[in-house]
Length: 457
Ligand code: ADP
Ligand code: MG
Image (cartoon, rainbow, N blue to C red; front, side, top):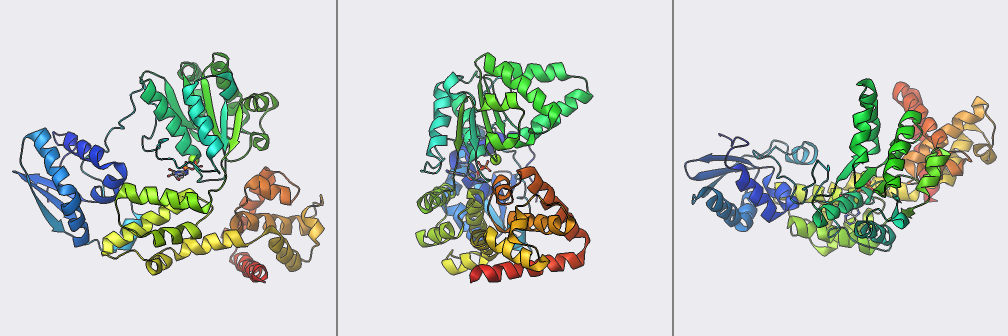
């Protein structure tokens, strides 16, 4: 089948369809389809009949209207079913079949230069709850009082998947909505470091600096990547100060508290001078509300009982919560299956088990089992002793904490009377050994099942 070429006159048609349906719905139902257009017939190729019925009944009229508006043609739509060989695998793991039209340009973004914002992360689709209320309010306060000393910088920290990136983009989008001429830039700490290194190599540090100096608001995500790299940290401090002194807004996110970042003193105290707020794990009601919002935005029938089942099972990470819902929806729409609790149970078994383990295992069980296995005392896990016979089991225990608990690196560090970088080092060392030594890997597996047995008692 001929496919539509990009950049031709039909691009605005699909942009319009995406705008009307919303990004989530478009991604869910139309992006996996292929389109062909000949004469006045649009052919849509889809994986199954269920999919066809959904598009026919809900979206066909929107597609037709968009064609009429942009091309003046009254089109007919025909469907071709072409089953995907291994539907679950394809839908769940491959990237979606690219649609013939590029993603619509973000609607809100009108900054004078690329702000790098994702317009699907907004305040209006962020569910406010006791666990994130302070961060949410502080983020809104930043928009309304840009650069105000009281809110500058705003630092948001949390374990992964709890909405830091979402809030950073929401701030940027809202600023641009209120003032399209504002100069806003979103970037990750990692990007900052790599752009800085590139600038050094190309001897273009001056233009690198200039880019930041002209900003009204810098949104830097995951600044833990900047911390500890002396040169980039110095450059970041320089950028930070230039912005701060001229009353520009800075918003930062991190996977740990500013204290735990191990930053240079001068930078650390600057960060501490603004607002620092943590996002905690959402409670059950919030998790249900997040899933319901997602369900409504993709327009898929899925019962509240199933929503509650997922929300009860997945507690520690909103990204996984949403991912589970999408996995279920993809599976059910591909197979024309109604989503029920038994289907969800089976399909999400791996994630649910992982989550159970994460919640169940505690540090003491890990220490107990590892201590017994290597014949060391409980005190040795926190002692200063560095002999290999003690240090190695301690590193193994730290590694197991990163795998089996949902504690953050600094939290694990505290359990062993050490800092987070020691935990990172231990984790990497043990991982490497597991990869290269099958006997050791088997030994670790044995230890893990012993830990689970202890934990159940
Ligand atoms: P982090 O940056 O903290 O790792 P993200 O901002 O990437 O987390 O959030 C992960 C996913 O969960 C995103 O899709 C985000 O939209 C969603 N999410 C997190 N918290 C909320 C919330 N309170 N309301 C709605 N969606 C949320
Ligand atoms: Mg993030």
